[in-house]
Image (cartoon, rainbow, N blue to C red; front, side, top):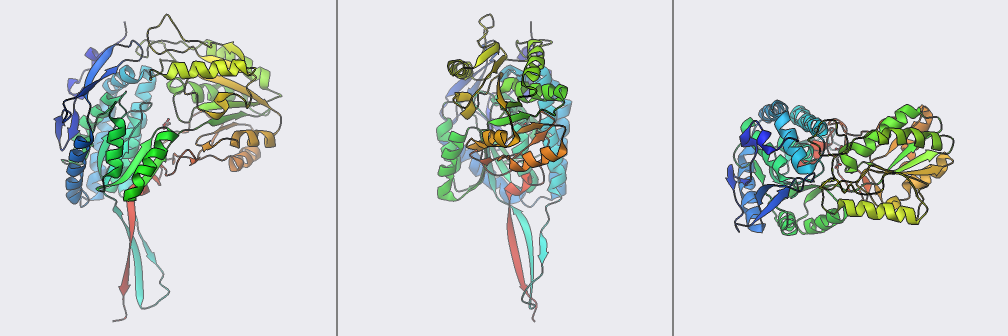
Length: 492
Ligand code: SIN
């Protein structure tokens, strides 16, 4: 029997209310929604279904708090962020268990996400003190010109269910470091991880009103619109689907808010003939099976050059067969359930469509009726081609589709033939080729001989319909700042 929420050591990390102006509160309407464990379909929590009235209260509190928070020293903000990071690491086992029970990822992966999440807080603690302006050489010698940066105001942070802790800290860490106050809107499938983060951020010392959490599942469209249309919110940061990102962008236009959008991807993973195939297989397993294929940078189209196509497929197939599927709380499991109720259906639709267009199912290809939750067998398909649905859309599941290609030019054309451009991966022993292909790919991020693009110090984000803005890196904090210039008359 796997662990349950009863096994959490620090019981106060388990909150089932929203958080506004330093108070744990229910929805103004009294409505609630349920949270389920995707591995067992057991109900694990009842959470307030907040609405536009609650958004208004949270934004008002954040705006009030901003008046004093923006005047705190960067050093003080850095101390609070470091404390929050330390608290995450101290409570990593509890946070990982909460995350596994609401999202489904394995405990080992959940622990990895906690460490990844803490790294953003530590990174932005450092960045808080490195927000520099410039002294600009003036053309008019009677003037002196300088610039400095100021926090933009209240930031709304809208986070997804696939990384419910790390996406909070990647956005909120940057916002609080910059001197902005925050309203968080975690995904309805996974609010418990965000609420546990609010407990720790509060304990770290962030002042009243600087962090607020709005919980919602069925009222999400109303809540999103209320955040986007509220003029006191000066920044919206969203991670999620391209469809919702475009809707939020249109809703933010009336108040001309600053926006960062980290949206859908369709990452090419390219294995060249000169690749080290052990590296290629390991990178592919990491890029594809992390969070059961539910990352926005997951390898969605695996292009393999024809000289190594069959050998790579055989090696990969052996590794996939060794993966153990089951509830993330169980020892030895590598692939947990999908988080979302409609995810298995979507993946099966992609698999059937691939079959219809000539795909050869080598492994898997169906759900797992013996397991109660949203499980899909790790699936390997050969002979993929452009007609298939998965060529154009993210499958967001543990489904590996192999496409054969002949030349570098051909694969660049194939890889760029899509409307999104977030992550990508190249496996080659040639540095010249890695450089050439990196320059040619229409994406925001390229991994060379590895399967993970995630590091707090590296800017994360995409091009084309994958959105704009960057998170992490030195760029992440800039999204929460505006530049003010000062021109001084020195003639008298
Ligand atoms: C995402 O899938 O949205 C984020 C993945 C990452 O940060 O590695």
